Length: 372
Image (cartoon, rainbow, N blue to C red):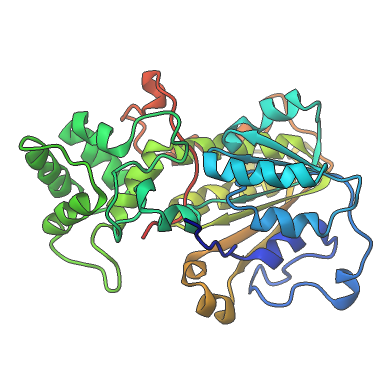
C-alpha cells in the first residue's frame, strides 16, 4: 500500500540552504514565493549537505534539483521504509549517501564517510504522512492498529511493551512532561487499571482509555492527542536526539553554512529557538559581568529568522498549520573547547527522571510531528 507524503515548507527550506540572499528582515514571515526568477535560474550549488530526516525524500529531491553535479547529500533516517526509498534514490544519483540511523549520529556518520565540515543541514522534525496513515505503525489514534510508535521498527520497545511494565508515576511523568497533558495522573491510573485486566495492544483501545480519563477537551483536538505525542516522543527519545543533533550540526557547519529546522510542537521548537539564540547572542548570558566588549564571546550563528506556512499551503496540507521553520547561518567565529554543546540547554529535555528504553540498555527509535 502506498501513502502520499506532502513535504511541509518545501520551497523556503531548500531556499534557506542554497540561496545566499535568503533572510527575513522582520524576523518572521509567511512562506510564499521565496526566490526571484533570477535566483531560481542561478548556477547550481556545490558543497556537502545533510538531510537529517529523509522521510520519503521530498526535501532531499528538491534540494538535489538545486545542487550541482559535484555536490554531495548525506541522508539519515531510522525508518526502514524510508531507508528503502533513500537507497532507491541513491542508486540513481551518485551524489546521495544513505545512513540508516537517527540524526543524533551525524558526527560519527560523517566521520565514517570521511566528511569534515558541511555547507548545510535540514531537519524536518515530524512523523511523516505515510507513518501516520499506516495503521500498522501505531502512530495514529484515528486508525486501529498495533500500539507500536517506533520510528525504527527493527529495535527497541514498542509503546505497548512500555505501558505493560511502566509504573503509574513513570507514565504520569512522561505524559505530563512530553505531552503537557494536565490530566496525566488520571490517564496513568486509567491505563494501570485496564492493564490489570488485560494487555493494551491497540491504538484505538488506548485512545478510548485516554478519552475516558480526560474530563475536558480542547476545541478541535482529540483528547488523546497529547498522550500519543508524549508516548511517541519518549519511546523514540526525540528531544534527547534533537539536542545531540543540534550541537553536532553547529560544530560541523562551515562558515556561511546554513541550518534549517522545521518544528511542529512547542517542546522541539523551543529547543531549536533557544539554541540559535544562545549561539547568535552568546554575550547576553554575560551581560551583567564586568567584562570589556573585546572580552565578550562572539556570535557562532547568525539567526536568519523563522518562516510559517502561508494560507495556500495550509489549505492544501492541514499538517502545515503548526509548522515553524527556523534558519541560522554559521559565522567564522571559532568554537570553544566544549564545542556547541553549551548552546543546547539539556535542561529543556523533560522527563529525565524516567529512564528511556535506550537508557535501560535497549535501542530506541527516531523523529516528531504531532500525531493524528
